Image 1: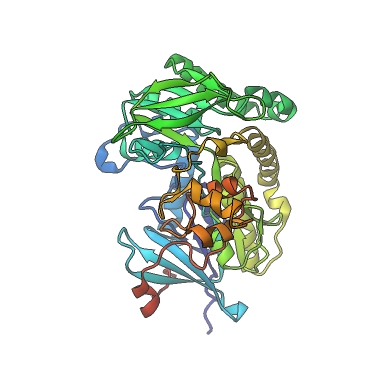
Image 2: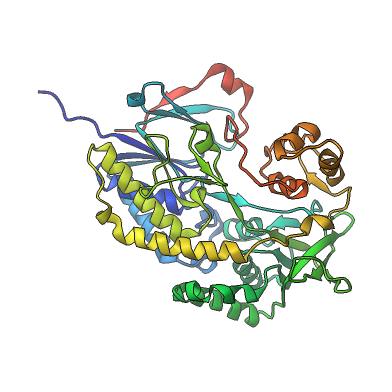
Length: 473
């Protein structure tokens, strides 16, 4: 007697909020799921936790929405025990191969472990991309000094290593991440000398109706503001850092006030001593794998439909890769994507009524994210503060003068031409750190850069190919 047909396999790339929500939704509906993630433990950047050997007694003190994480963690453990989910840790996905025969599915290629010298391939009938986002950092004189870190990097050190990046910190830039970073550093014992936010608080008033529809988010923001007051953290709103000072490491920063057009107000310079500057200007979505598959990208975001499907059959996307919007939005999108993928892999038409609550949450959180995106924008004239010798591309050591020359004298009108003329973006990070800065300095639209691979791959891996690794049945 013929055996039952084996369950179809969904590979989820990323084990953050979106990836975990998607994996659980699919596994609970009869689909075999393999979750591939570069980290050693599930949770992504949002739910990053200290290693067990560090003996953290209250890791939840560094998080909010901890109960949500506990539900995800327990659900993942339950599905792994039941054999419905395989969690492949320290799998750094560098390419997703679409087979010529659509019925043959996909092959997901990943480098293994910290060394990333060996590659494996995982078969998938469908792929769900939950690759998250990364920080946007704009350069300024002194930004390459030791002690200057990204805001998210400072938070990761605290959450994952229980270490402070320094004793006296300035948190600067723009975006909703700055407040929890400043609060976390202060609560852990650092002196936060200033929280420097370039956005104008009055901008929130223009979106009062939308904000009022999110009382939970307003309460969360008010909670952070109260904790900043409790720790006596000075707030410099509508200010920006124009220079970091120091010989061998950062010793101070200069901040200035901004006018309503985003230009520096002369005579407002103020120097603040510090040994750490945590700086960030928002987030950008990871789109490399999606673009390698040929998925349409709308601006900087992977384009999806109401089911979180991309325009490539068999590929779903959820979370920050479809647009920066925070953990709650990622959870809703992941749940919808997982349910849709499960239904279609099982050969049935998805019923949107089954995820109506998640869809409603997705709509509300997208509206809220649009407001934050409109308010938290970098100063319009930030590039005017760059000295000619300020490095823009750190990997290739390209200064601002080279980018300006490419535009003003050599006629470059887009980031690709600037890259060809200056090598900006050709280094190890492949432009992830400098693409926004190059676009801003060149005065052109910021676009994602389609690359064949999502991360650097050893030539030996490309030469010898990869062994097939099948998730357990």
